[in-house]
Amino acid sequence: MKSSLFAIILGLGVGTVLLLYLLLIENRPSPATTRVAVATNFLETLEKLVQTFEESSEHQATIVFGSSGKLYTQIKNGAPIDIFLSADTDRPKRLEQEHLTVPKTFFVYAVGKLVLWSKDPNLVDANGKILAAHQFERLAIGPVQVAPYGAAAKQTLTNLGLWEQLWPRIIQSTNLTHLHQLIDNEEVQLGFLAQSQIVKQQQVGSQWIVPQELYEPIEQGAVLLKRGQNNAAALAFIDFLQSAKARAIIEEFSYSVP
Image (tube, rainbow, N blue to C red):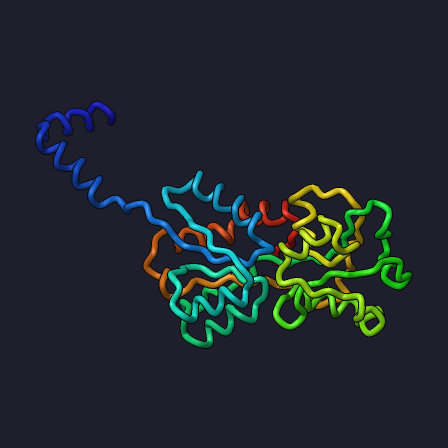
């Protein structure tokens, strides 16, 4: 079989073979780049995902990050973004209702976990009793009105019957990155973070992983925007995000995947 194929190629002549090769090269899909907007809490995980994606694909991905609310506003105002990875499901669904997404591309790509963390290795106990003991001056949480992890922190404190008692000690940070800096720099004694932040940075200190029954699941939604519907890289990356390889990376960063 191989010898017959070789004879056919020889019979075609050098010029014909070269022409066929050029046609194959011309018709091969060109590498493309997609722009992915991601909520800050998932940034480190996405960086690992993009690295893995680019190693196994001819395509590339550029990351834009920020709070889900700001990214949502930028997308509505025409920002050049192909894929949106939010820290909640509300904003991607709103974009879907506003006809800015490719229909039926929404899915939950990760479920976040809430943790109470302190840099002091002796402050936070394994059951979170420190909150009721009041043995701290200030507690940091995300903005409860716009940040999913801030809302989850309020739900936790409310379900523990501590929200009103602790309100005078609570500081609402602008985002999870700034919140982590406040605790890491010991400007506040403890705060509620995404568990992925602690795992990624291999933080020392003490922590309480908040039981899921104390707050609503922090489901994080992804959607393909209309700008990316004909972008080969965007389509490939959306598929990759739902692969077993991507799932393993997401779980490595202490998220769960539905």
